[in-house]
Length: 146
Image (cartoon, rainbow, N blue to C red; front, top):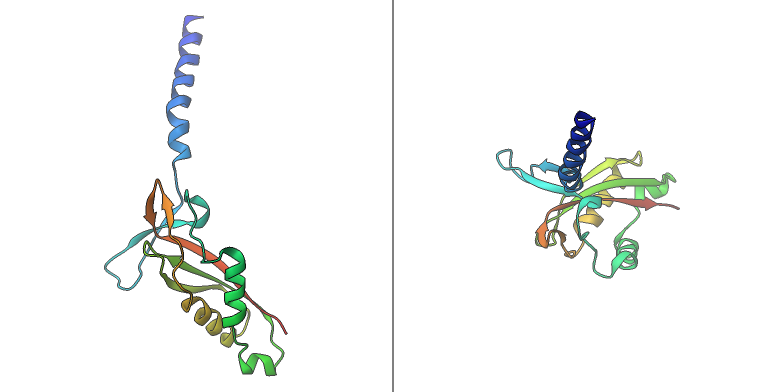
């Protein structure tokens, strides 16, 4: 009986110590922003305390994309539609960098236009972990519909 009580106490103590540590785990990846020598830790969008935000919020982001996006002539002429899924990093200064296509719409001109639109974005409000600004990866779809 005493062994069972000790085992139960040990399990309770382990859970009390281990659970807060598990809650603090963040999804962090390393990214090489410009050179092959330096790497930075980048937090995933859903795993920061305060997520980065476009000026004007979601409505401002949609308006910016709609005003900035230009349908490529080749894609328009050939009735090519689709959605380009892109990722980019909002740095600790709010600037957008490391823009990449994750999933193509099937046409290179749409991919280039999606990258151009994201690259022209103004500074975002920064993402934070424990009140410290951190670089955050954002995934954003850019739709092209006729």
